[in-house]
Amino acid sequence: MSEVERVYTIPLRDAYTAPRKKRAKVAVRIVRDFIKRHMKVEVVKISPKLNEIIWSRSAEKPPRRVKVRAKVIEEGVAEVEPAEAGGS
Image (cartoon, rainbow, N blue to C red; front, side):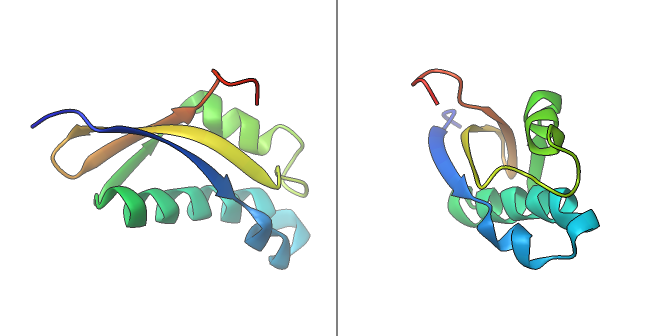
């Protein structure tokens, strides 16, 4: 299988409808669901660096959007990391 790699800007605004103390956790779930839907995979592995970016301003204030690079590493499994190139 050829390795598929895509860059997405994922809006996390829906995390702000959750209770304040749960927003970062909900943001991680939003990233997972977005990648599952768009890459058509069952398992999504989020890199520690992306997790740190989401949690960087505590659980109450995750970023409004995050730019990520997603790769299908094997059948049904995707790996997600921050997209650093591009100045975002």
